[in-house]
Length: 515
Ligand SMILES: *[C@@H]1O[C@H](CO)[C@@H](O)[C@H](O)[C@H]1NC(C)=O
Ligand SMILES: *[C@@H]1O[C@H](CO)[C@@H](O)[C@H](O)[C@H]1NC(C)=O
Ligand SMILES: *[C@@H]1O[C@H](CO)[C@@H](O)[C@H](O)[C@H]1NC(C)=O
Picture (cartoon, protein in one colour):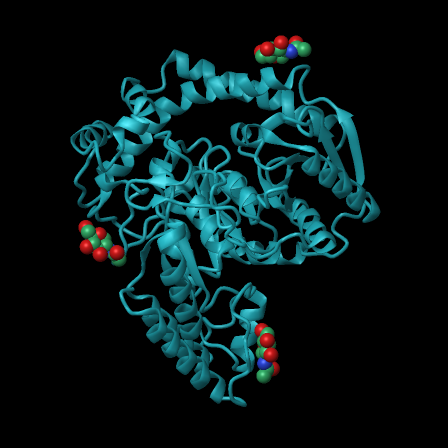
């Protein structure tokens, strides 16, 4: 990483030339915005190697990370893994040929890897901790031949410590590559920003309530928040197993679908959730739902209260663009149903969700974090109370004066899932049943469409899936997204709709680093 940029650039050129030399010399592979499909094609026709790709992304990280702070750690073994993938491909062993073989992947720093990378959720308290094994999703990536490029910056403790969006003690402040002064959103900020700025081919984030959908929306990314249990949470620093889920953040829907295909599935270390969700995984995978005509015949509900000027800073530009998008959906055969109510009072519903989520999550966070920490073969901290004490002992590094740690302290005061927590969880189940689930049933919807991550609470409490896709840019150039959400296991139809929408609109463009 300390290598001067020009030297690294020279190495890249040399490597690309050598790789291209196998065919017909340098073939001018376009690294920027390269999709998984383009990369696989490049592997096949000899215009690119995994090694050259890793060098490209390392160079991007080298030049952009001092500004964006999207990456916390680069994997010292990434080039070796890439070389291995290149060798495997050359000898065409069984493992080559999968869509992520040789593809550099960046992981949010709460996803454990058993290698030279640290897994810290952005906190200095966990630096030096040793994990027992790869997280379930990381193990699947490795088995598919992907290259682990490094770890991306989360908001500390996956947002349970409410800090400035995108900030972590280890990673610093992640900026939005489109408009540097704009909110990049939490807590999978690093993955979203890194993918947006071409610092990785694809990335993985995690979501408890909005942490994939929000940063994806505000950084012109595609984010898939899978049905809870579709992807294993084993080895992921937790907030609550009731809502936590791991999903891809990528530049295109097909890229995200390729990643999803690799990371879904049963994991004995997250047996209950992955066991019950595995029935949703389609035979033949998710790629078959990348259909150009994916909007045709789909019933899409637009719940009242979301597309309103002023709400969440939405202005006239966004509202006009969203209206154009509804027209595009109709043009492509969707039945768009407006003027439907998810609740008699949406503000009250979202407030009710937020309040009860907080009650349940405080207790669940303490239980699950303590379980995670106590399972580590080595760790400087062994419990939530150790972490709180660590933060108090390191007030400058952890910016205690700015952010405090009130939710951590409140969580520490809880004592398991008692009657208060049970009542809150029951209330959340009712709010889901009487809200999203009832609406979907009543109008026989394939999806509801909402702006950015504004409906994330509706999806979070029921463990429901959602996909956000780039929708536009506001007057300052800040991206915004459009979100297709549904019921458990609706990934196939959400992929159909979001892919057809992406093809019809092609909104994403590269970031311009405006002030
Ligand atoms: C190989 O495929 C890539 C697309 O991934 C393309 O850009 C390049 O021009 C192709 N090169 C050759 C020699 O066919
Ligand atoms: C992991 O953290 C240690 C400090 O404890 C550091 O020396 C090491 O470089 C980190 N690993 C990577 C891959 O950055
Ligand atoms: C909706 O609920 C909010 C919050 O509970 C309340 O402030 C508002 O007055 C309610 N609106 C209506 C129209 O009842």
